[in-house]
Length: 571
Image 1 (cartoon, rainbow, N blue to C red):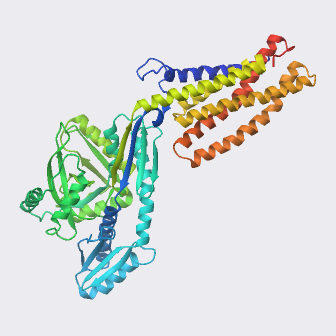
Image 2 (image 1 turned 90 degrees about the vertical axis):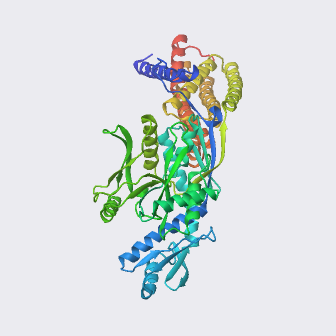
């Protein structure tokens, strides 16, 4: 054997040793605390190891209402910039599918001017609003139907993107997140252990807002609202969504609430059960120009003085300017930092704050619990806010028994199929068939090692991809062996026949596998879930097939020729 073949043999041996070490933890089910140098194992999909399956729905009625509140604030700011005095009227939700809002113009002479400015910036073709009424000094408007359609189309897409970002940071391997219809998102998380935390991270809207507090509302009136609402049956109960309680309370207090304001609450949780013990009401602005969309970064810090974790946030350049102006114009007043309707803190603004830095404190409690809460909060803020509020409509925990059953059946099917192929190749090609079986075993070993190295997830369709790889690999060996037999039939010497057979079969093998690889790439690019799992193992299997069938098989034949001195071959 010449020097170049020794190099190839050394490289093959190196790959074999690395592959064996990569697969051993999976075969023997080593845990992460084992002393074995390789810690990673093949990741199994939801169908093989179980996990969490959820269906989340979107309530577009609330989405429309929130959009109307946001545009009310923008319209008022626009009119104030033009010197038109105005105030925000109450939102009419007589028809939840089409809520209406009003702007009250202080001077009757400014009415037409106000309407012109609203038309220029917000109403008309291609714009979000349409006028629905003009009475006295009141301008009434609602969302354009085309704009509502755009909201519906983008809500699911944006939600999937945000959820995927959160799950990626959470550390779940190969989640499946797809849309179902126009108002549902289906999520599959294989191997998730902390289900409640996963649900909390996924379902948290993470709508961060900075709103000024109306301290003109007396504490007595706020306490009266809380007392009367309990008597009316509006009370926070375990298992009820906090956002639903906030909505009901705002509906209850709407008659006495000043225009442009709403209720928000600060929660006090039980340290043991994590249930809400007390709710402190605040009257805050119903809309704001400073939200989580203006954030650049959010990170966990620890207050050295109190040894308590908090979340440090940094605004983008435009957000920093808004924050500086907001704090400068409201010095001496309280500003509430609100996340999903929950007031985390409401500090008094001591002076104008420049630089675009702020912090969210988490109150008192166990250090580890606060650190976990700060970590989760910073995670969802970095990943971005969900564009809409998602409701958990269905949840199923897929047990490991299903995965075990699937693995056993797939393993049995794979063994039977491989045994039949091996038996045929051994009978038909004799000693050369045994070399093909050896290369085939190395092929499967390399595929599994690649799955470990790439941290890919093996699903039931992925196992089918491996089974298909076995058939394709045998096909490559058959092409080579038939070319060798043709050369021998022409009277070509054995060693030369083997050399010619491998050389002439290479391009045929490459062409056949390349066309299959292109199809696999299309499946990987355009497919979802199980289809992508099949495509991953198929593409990896194609690469390993070309290498083992041609290069590894050629090395084995070189050894075989040395043993027979190039005089005979059993084929």
